[in-house]
Length: 334
Image (cartoon, rainbow, N blue to C red; front, side):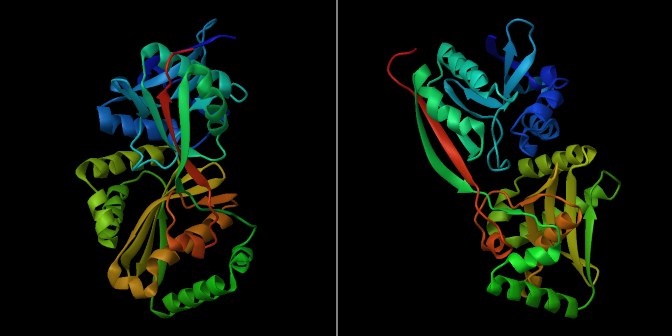
């Protein structure tokens, strides 16, 4: 079987994308068609104007791989902004990952790419092993470094079992904070998980709380990223993936999370809270409610996504490593 890589628009491969995604070993929500569509609409105006590198069978033209890449002259990177996308990778049919990467690397040589930077590859991705073993075959020097960590929790059958699995200190602190919140007055946990009339207002509340949380988050919320979040909530709600959750105290929203359902996993994408309610630990406790909800849904994993914030470990997180790969052309070609 012989493969060839070529640039096509996202619109041209949209009909084939879900089938390839459902078969790929890298079924990250960030590689799903709804996510890629949201990014394409905001960065390029439409999916017709957003290119991706496809890998097709020379014999019948069938799609065997997609690499969401961006090329600027001879420098190539993943196509999505890593500030809004935690995991990045390629899609390929299981067992064909190496052949798909061979086609990509060979295309890069023929196209005169001088460098490839791949940020956000997980340590359990087939791409990590393949790049280490195959890049040199095509004249690429591959350097790998740890980019970040992504804590996650393997979920037990019950909330009590999870709490019991925490360290004695963290277990005591969580229970103490939950009791304090309950004693403070009326506290309510609510979730928006589908597209409906109230979703725009819910997103406004989420963005407001996110901006209040810290100067860094306020700076993050540029008009472009706010627009991306608006599009993203619609595409992910339509895909039955969105979970926009709030903790209310006395009828007022005081903390919020945006999460996405990915099969039997829940991914915590971002969050915000009102600093006036910091004394009630409303940020951490909303995440605890979300984690408990994931257990009650029978999910397998709760993924805190990128970053080593202390609360992730307070709630039982264990690190998954994310890599940055930098490929540069060696002297000569294959």
